[in-house]
Length: 263
Length: 226
Image 1 (cartoon, chains in turn yellow, blue):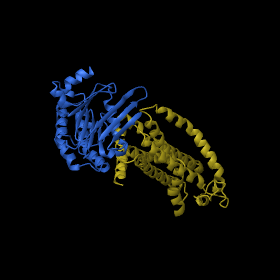
Image 2: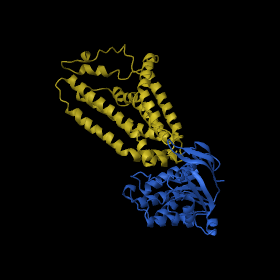
Image 3: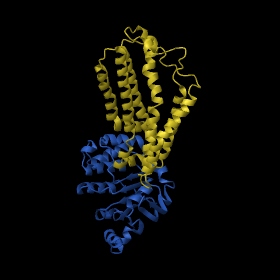
Image 4: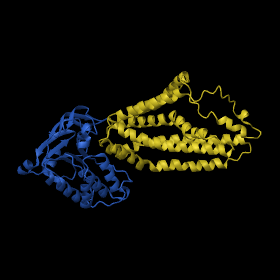
């Protein structure tokens, strides 16, 4: 445990500038959201939600860049130092991943708060349960089907390329893996589409539309959402469960390959 | 036997690091690993550290594959591998947290002896960083030390401090393998010398025997590797 905590400390020292910059960038996005001044309230809300979606996407890219800096460590010799330490490859990969996920949670929960603020600016106020879903459950779901597997994939890719750099052309497996990813994603998405809703869905944000009728103006809630609470199935659980399992597999493979890395 | 190579060959993408190398390293020796650039010195030490895997043959340390016992051996590479934000205090935390055999008190003594400044490595000179890395390595109570060019690119004063520390800190049950280009400076340190040429063993001799034969380590270096 002490070794793992030391690796986490090392991750923090290596990445704190990235983490602080990422979290600090939310101030910029908040400022941008506040600058949106469109008279039609629904359009204003739509633009602001789009800005937030862009912030979420950029955050995912930054997080991947943060965990994917193995190549520069390989060049500068720090990777060699890490390979010589007693903790296993699984511990190294795990620490790298856990730290990145911690930063990601902070970032996406903050985005959850911003989304609550956006609705509040539009005069839409939620009850405590919906608020908790917006700030905690929705970021968790969104991360589970996007950022969490993406971070694991990035770590695996970088470890894979580094592993076969010394005694073989490491860029070959890396390129094959990168080129094969879109096909794998398409296959995965198709498979998940087929099995979605075999389990009961996660009925998140079911009360959001109910908050809209208080919104008076030319656009009422019914014209924004074609929402039937009885037909609402919620968010499908299968993609979340499959991608979380896939994330675990990717991390295990990365940890195993770490044991093979030469420097 | 503390470390052993049996018919070891290591090939890289386009070159060969070492070829059919067989060597034994018992406990309690200071061994000079000498050779010209590209002779396979670093490859040999990295194979023993578990940083490289042999293409063929067997490498063992403490009777096991080196990667499995990496917590029991010390490797000091020639790469200036510390993070730029690291201070000696950070280095201490890093080593103490990861290595059970790291002696904090010894590390602080070594920082004093080697006159390592207490600031970030990015503001240190190459010699100061080299001395910090050596303090990190020597503060461990390991039995096998693999030091790859610890004197390379380091000023004369720092080199002398490093050499003094190596002699002072060495315990008779420890084995040190030291590769260096500074053959003349390190000559007095070696008990045994392994000369490598183009990845092959050119000569494996006791330093005392070389001196008794009228040729020192340096003279033999010139003769064998010329």
